[in-house]
Image (tube, rainbow, N blue to C red; front, side):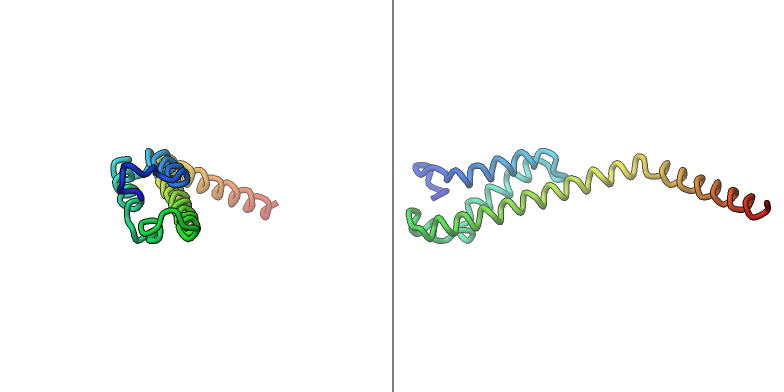
Length: 119
């Protein structure tokens, strides 16, 4: 189905591919990697075998929807990886200052506790 240019791509698959490319812009390995990996996965007959043998069957539609659901899960996983990358970059940039502030706050609290116990 997907290797034959005469047969159009199913709208759910096209939407999934667009989502993956949109999310892939910020992916740590780059958009080219995401594009190649998703094309390879979408064209793999193992992901939806009945769609390659009989594309007009109900079984194909059911299998296709299951595969698209798994693909959407992978897009969410990509989003998680991107968010982790951004979090780590922010922590590296600004984390040390937060640790210093927390340490100074603890020191001030300890001084305040000592002064309260002396009074």
